[in-house]
Length: 592
Image 1 (cartoon, one colour):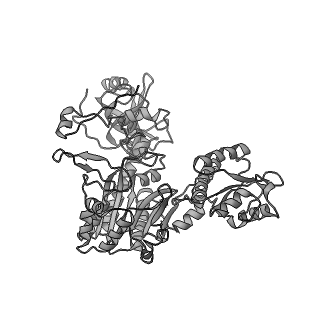
Image 2 (spheres, one colour):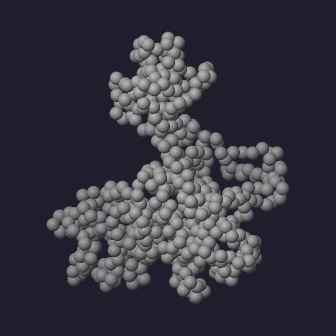
C-alpha cells in the first residue's frame, strides 16, 4: 500500500477545471475504463468527479498501478489538467482530465455489497447496514452538506440578532410532554432514572427567569414514539426563547430566519410577511391544522342545504349537530372513475367516515349517487354552491364535524396526489389561535392541546373553569407544504395561573410538586413575560433538499422499529453493568 508522503491535496475533484495547472486530488474510484493502451479512472469526492487519464506517455509503473485499481479504492493522484478529447456535458469537470504523473493507492477495497450510484435500486435495509458506503453517494452527501449549511445559517442569524447559544442538560428529570421518555438508569441513585429531553422546554423557560433574554440552541431531542417518514426517535430542534416579547415579536424573528436561510442555502427570496390562517379557518378550509396550500380543492360547507333535503344521510348528520361538507376535484372525472371512487370510499371508511357520496359529471348530465332522494332542485342547488362543472367530481362526507373536516382534509391530499396537481413551490403559512383544550370523547374530559406552560389569550382566562371549549391559546405553528416545521407559544409566567392550569389538567398538588416543583418555585422570583418556539432542523432540511424521508438527511438514522441497522443498536449490555445499576431483566417465557 502506498503512503501520501510527498503529496498534498491541492484541489477537490469536482472543482478541478483549470487547464495547464498541476494538481493533486484524492478520492474514491467510481469507475474504471481499461482499453489496453488507455486507462481512464473516474475519481470521486464530495464535490464531484474528475477523470484521471493514463496513456503511452504515462510512466510505466504508474500505468501498471492504475491497471490494478478497482471500484472504491482510495487514491491520490498528481498530474496536469488538460482538455478532454471526448467531453461529458453532464459533469462540471466534463471538459477536462488529469494526465497523471504520480498515483498512490492509499487503501484497497473489497467489492462493495452494492454499487455506489445515486440512482440505485438497492433496497434501503441493505444500504442502511452499510451506511458508510451509502453515504458515499453524492445525493446523500449533498443532503448532509446542505443540512450543515442550514445549521450554520441558523447560528449566524440568531447570533447576529442578539441571541445567546446555551446548552441545556441531556439527562433530566422525567416530565410529561406528550410522548414517552427514553430513560437512563442511575448507577449512584439505585431505582432512580434520568430522562433524555423531549425538548429543552423547562430549561429554556428557567433561562428567561435567569435573565438571558434571548436564548438559542440547536438542541438534540428524544421521543420514544412510533416512527414515520418525517419522524426519528432522536432529532435536532432549532430552539429559541425570548423575554419581553409577544406573538408578533416571535413571528417577526422567525420570518427573518426563514428569509435568511433560504437566501443563504438556496439563493431563493421568500417574500414576507408569510400568510396566516387561524386554526378555525385552516380546519374549515383545508381540514387540517397543517394544510398544504400548493393546490386548491378547498372544503365547502353545504349543511344549510342538507338540513332539510330528501337524502336522510345528509339530513340526519345535520340534525344530530354535525355537518355535510364537500370537496370538488376539477377536470377529474376521467381519472376518478367509479372504481377509483369505490377505493376512495374504502379509504375514508378506514379513517373514520361512514361512507362517501359523490357527484361525477361525465356525460351531458351529472351522475349523482344520491339524486333519487333529493327534491325540488336540491341537487342543482348543491351543484351551484360547489361550482361543479362538466368533467368535475364532487365528494361528500356527512358526520360529526370533528369527523367531516379531518376526513375531507386527508381525502383532499389523497385525491391531489392521484391527480398529480400539487405544484412545486415553498408555501409557508402560519396557523394561529389554537384551541387551548380538546375534548377527549373516549375519556369524556377536556385535555390540553399543548404543553401545560402555554398562555391562554387574556380574554379567555375567564372560561377556564366554565367553558373550556372557548379558551384560545397564545400558540402558533409554522407549516411548509403541509408539514409542520415549527410549534411555539407564549408561556405562563404567573404563579397562580400556572397552578390553575395544572389543576385544570387534573393534576393534584402532589403531582405538580413532584413533576414541576422547581419551575413553579422559580415563578415566585419574578418571571418576565416570554415565549418561543422549536423548529425541526431535520424536517426543514428534508424539505429544502427535496428528500422523501428524514433518513435521507440524517447521517445514521433509525428505522421503523427504532433500531440502527449498521451498529445493531439497541444492544444487550453485560451482567456486570446491570448489576452496577441494580437492574435485573426478566425474560418472558414463550407461550406454548
